[in-house]
Length: 336
Ligand code: GYE
Image 1 (spheres, rainbow, N blue to C red):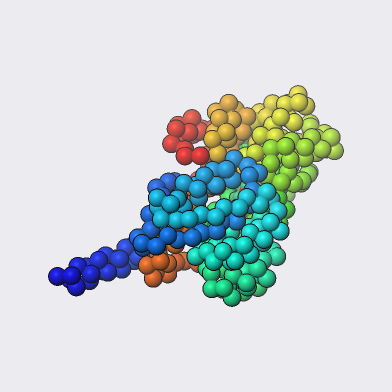
Image 2: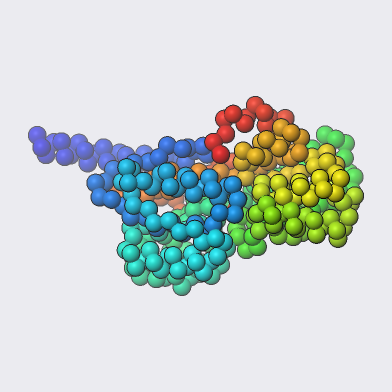
């Protein structure tokens, strides 16, 4: 009887790991995943910082998922945008012998040495949110996050059809690109998206490109400088690589006497709560979604691994595009 029970529970474990292995992560999943093994799993999370509303939602997602009630001990480090702090945090996680290291890397490069140390200590590294460029892909186990190049391309597609609908498809269009933290994969992908779009449209001109470091104050400062350099009258489109920079830039545009969303078309990324408020108010035209709720997704990966399963190396989450035509209807369904 005991043996039968054991076999049955083993079978259900196998079935569970099979299911979780093949289960697609859903864009708006918030359920926390409770792991099935009896030991407490020790996790170290090296977080980018607290630069944006997206990041705060991401931190909350991890802190509410990796709880003692769910069977985890979470060591959490906020690196305040500093890669060196993240590297030191990873070393500390190795010294504390965690079961898994999670990293949302500030920038893409410069990780080889510390990841080799994690590998030598046989601690699996899971990347979440931004990606890394490494010499050897086996230095990390897998990555889950948004497809930043696709997001950038989505913003371009939205602009194309918006201009077509307004009969502005063949007009000269002057574009400002407010970039995120230079070297972060979210910046690299979104910048590539708009640069491709500009290449493909001879009447689109990139008149300024500056980093606002994914922050509201950074976005305002960069936009003020750009307005001073090129003149507010020249700017037709603002491509802001995240919501927070768009909000800062909106202040700068208003201070220059122009109406954001009317005099200047504004496209932003993340599509957090405030972007919806501003789309409804007419100040932002389009928000391309980037989902921050990665805690349950990473927990699902760990669950699968704990049960002997394998996971896909690269896991993109589904993301949508919103604009003023659907913002009011969709806002009540949003989770961040
Ligand atoms: O878009 C931005 C945050 O890496 C996707 O980081 C993330 C980006 C997000 O600062 O708001």
